[in-house]
Length: 421
Image (tube, rainbow, N blue to C red; front, side, top):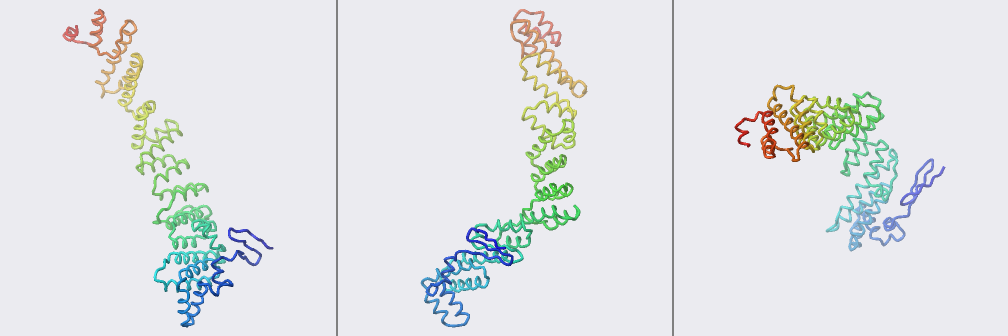
């Protein structure tokens, strides 16, 4: 069987026995090894290495011969080394480049160092145990990060870690990928897997236990997912998964532990939408922080219905009455305002601690009902006036009897009544 596969920079020839890579010979390789290499500075620099190994003085003669083009020769040897698959020739070309740059007074070694790093990585993945015969061009087109991703897909975690460390790339994704694979295909029980994952990843920066826990949850291992989430330090990462897992109260507790009021509110709003109202209040009643935040949000949004239910559940009669009082101030007429105040008074009627407030509410309700009647019977408006102002206006309009009736209703002293007249 023979397969010919097109590659970015050549073609790959695959049979049952071998894999070969066919490409156009790179210019730098031709410059070092081609037919015209006799007069090439790079080929002379390579020959100088052979003379140096023989301890021949010709090595220095060769260097002096290409002195004017030594920088070019070094660069060519470095680039040619990158295109070689044989480690023997890689080393020899890099050795030639090293000799040349040691003679130069000024030379930027960054390309040389980068090529050494690249070849170490390429030689590691080209090994028959790994089986990724990448060319230099393919490696740079792929990028080191994506090469590591390919190694992870093959579960070559150790090599991926070594490459990441060598190239100073982040390694947290490698650990997370390993842990996710462990929870997906691990045959051990949940406790054993959790302990193994935590021991291996403990102290490693940037590890997302939430991602590992989500993998466990998707595998139907909810208990393992919950255990792993306990090791996620960021509350904002824990909460969404807990909500997906129907762990509503635990999600709320984690949000409260984080101290992030926005996160707490988002959880509360989701729970309010999801749960029956009685169940929702049952969840937050034992959590003062949650109660305070949902109360503040309801006040800010003017959600009086939620506030009434909240205060009723908490038996906070005064706060509930205040909601009705605020609503009464927003009513378009005296009758509806009086109805709201009557509801506020009803809330306070069973409490012995709010006698004064209850009395004031009842008086205000009575006054509003009287004013509503006056507005209906007379031509002028009385809504919004105090008791004294109402009496004064009635007297001025000639309705002394009605003014006298209000005096009696609100027990206005005779001296005050005379002063009003």
